[in-house]
Image (cartoon, rainbow, N blue to C red; front, side):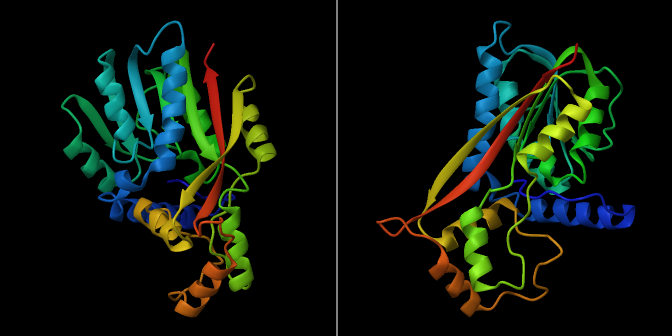
Length: 274
């Protein structure tokens, strides 16, 4: 799951960070699908919107941008009404998993979403589920989407906003106030400004999603299985001591039955190229 947003950095730092992201997701490729509850919900929301339109799900060329293990790429293949289908991801490890699970005929491309190796006006639909928040600046990705989309083509993007995992963030702040443990997210106003700077008539929908977990450690385990661990500059250089982890668990708010809830501030961006 993409769960981080960064300010613009130097080119060297950006390359290092992207390599770290790709490696983290690649290491989680085998466990990703089993832990991707949120990813499936948010992607299914876009897929249902696409299928509800009068013209139906057909697109001659579809790009799953940030496809991960190819869960939704395969969904498009199952529709049987796509002539050309490609999945792009920064992580070669994720694409190895996708290639093993996917049918023949899908193009799997290791590439940076900010520099797509695709010609202008070549894609009818770009579907991107929980990827764009991993990029230095979403505007560069949006410009690439604008470039490769054909006239009349559609863009569907999901992402996460500030307030996501706020319960975990507050628990860690109380247990270990001198270090960051939870990734940062774009604010809703910030996302609106960046999207509208490139796609002035885009539609943006938001919603709070709350998912249950048995414990804070179960939540941490899910994030680890997704490859979505914290990678910000304020993280500890060494493994967090067990005592601090226990303190965080004590600070995390519990439900009456002892379980916990985690909040995710979700956003979807929809746009059609005129």
